[in-house]
Image 1 (cartoon, rainbow, N blue to C red):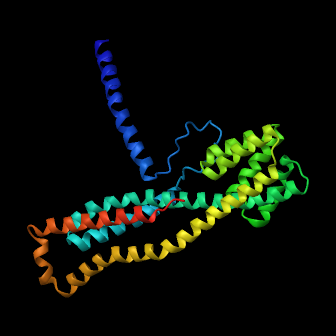
Image 2 (image 1 turned 60 degrees about the vertical axis):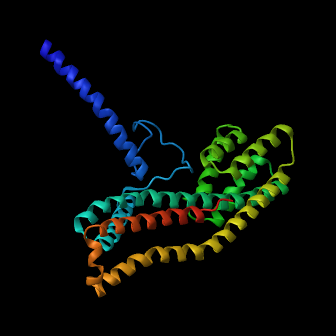
Image 3 (image 1 turned 90 degrees about the vertical axis):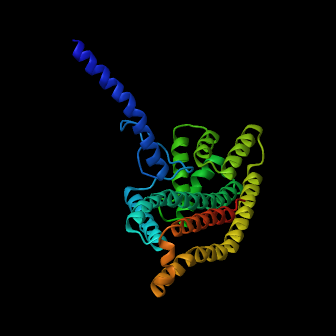
Length: 293
C-alpha cells in the first residue's frame, strides 16, 4: 500500500510538472501560428468566425515555415559561411507563419470593411424604396451575391447569419452587436451602436446608412492612397535589405581572400553586429510602414 501511494504521489507530482511545460509549449505553438483547436472538446458546436484572429491550415503553416527556414538558413550561411551555425539560425524561420498569419488577417479585415461599405449602399437604397429594416438586410444578401459570387465571402456569410437570427425572432440590433463584437472593427462597431440608438429613439435610418457608408468610403480612400504611396517605399526597403546579402555573396565568390579575415577570431563579432543592425533596421522599417488610419 505504501508503494502504491508513493507511486501515485510521484505520478501526480510528475503530472504537475509536465502540465505547465505542455501549456507553455502549446502557447509557443499558438504564438507561432500553429493551427491548433483551442475551442475545447469536439462535442461543442462550431463557433462563429472571428475577424480579430486568423487560423492557418496545416499546409499553410508548413509551407510558410519551410520557406522561412530556407530564407533564414541562406541568409545565415551568406553571413557566417558555417553550415552548423546556419542550421541553428534557420530555426528563426519558424516565425514566418506568424508574419504570414498577420498579413492574411489584415487582408481579410480590409476586405470586410470594403464589403461592409458596399452593403451599406444597398441597405440605404432598400430603405429609401420603402422596405422595412429587416427586409432591407434580407434583400442585401441578393445584392451581395451579385457583387461577390463567391459563397465564402465574409460579409455574405454574416448577412446570412443575420437572416437566420431574424428567422428565430432575434432582434436585429442584437444580431448586429454580435457581428460587431466578432469583427472588432471600429466602423462596424460604431454603426452597430448608432443603429441600436436609432431603433430605440426612432431616428432616420436612411440618413444613418448614407452617412456611415460615406464615412467608411472616405476612410478607405485615404487608406488606399497611403497604400499606393507606401508601396514603392516598401519595395525599395526590401531591395535595401537584400543588397547586403548579395554584396556578401559576390565578395565571397569573387574575392575569397579579401573576406577570409571576417571568418576567424573577432570577424564573427563584426558579422554578428552587422547582422543585428540589419535586423534592427528591418524592424524599424516595418514600424514606419505600418500606418493606421
